[in-house]
Image (cartoon, rainbow, N blue to C red; front, top):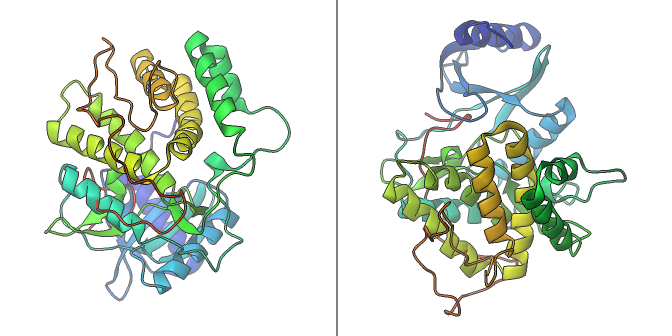
Length: 350
């Protein structure tokens, strides 16, 4: 474990970037939020604000991500330009522009709709970039066993049952994801910026990469991330309502079989991680969520199934099964509304 104080590490990182690139950055502070450890705020010699973040991958992947984001930024999409990609001794770092934003607020249903809306701007953004890969969560794996399968298989009967269902579902999509949208694989509320009026203005924290596929896949991860808030002992009713609003949007916009597939891809990753690192209580609600969304409960429609508490009671005001729903293909042009809030991201927050 690294016990070096955060401020000392941050200064060391900025100093090393300057030494290797001649950037002349001055450290100005740090974001205290973000699941990937926050971001270092800096300033260029000409006074432009910058953000330094760690990329969780190889130098080649970081350069590819920066190139993809430059391509869509040049097309007018609301993502930060990644101006430097630097390999240091302890990892790969981005130096990116710092996009303006208002102070973070809690995530309301209106802000959830704004998140959906800004994500819709990524439709067909990579039509001219067929070389960009699909998200790794839904890319077919090569030969050999999948260590995530081994984690679920070894945990217990419930996780083995979930694994069997995941395998059944994903075997129907042997070629992985299709589509030409830009896909953010960590589209949490904290990674969307807002102005003072509550309009979504930017999408940040691309430190897990930028991918090509169906942008609605990203919203399933958004909904998963909201479950931490829904399950909190002191859950905010407004934040909970935002999660339920996203449930409605997903049910309206993604065909049930496709939505079940997207949940299968996400839950394999998230459940394996929870089993390895989370508390038994957190693993239990991960299993609850997987069973609900993968159709393992009698009568469940995975697009509409309620979130169940540990007492078996529904925690979600109903979307009526059999009600009218507008279903569209997983990758075609779609329009929706949404907004996001939450803590500032690990990436670029003013």
